[in-house]
Length: 70
Image (cartoon, rainbow, N blue to C red; front, side, top):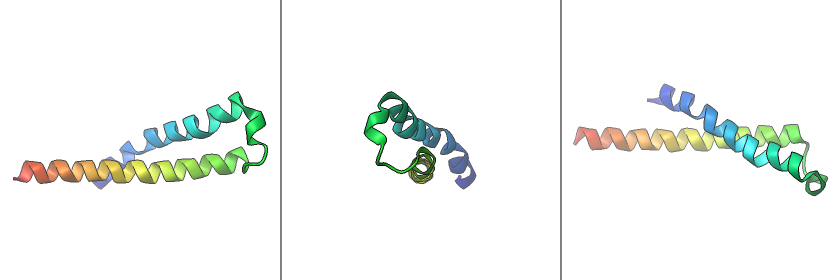
């Protein structure tokens, strides 16, 4: 269950990073002059997105397991 959650969380976290960092930085660069570098912000989004996706998927799998066992 944990291995499956770790594998699942990769793609949604990459989507969060691209949608939250990469696309806005290239579409409106004038708004992001005071923010951290794109590399730092991308790593932060990737790590936080990965943790959130992992925990959400793990929680959903745990609920499925509890429902099936009853």
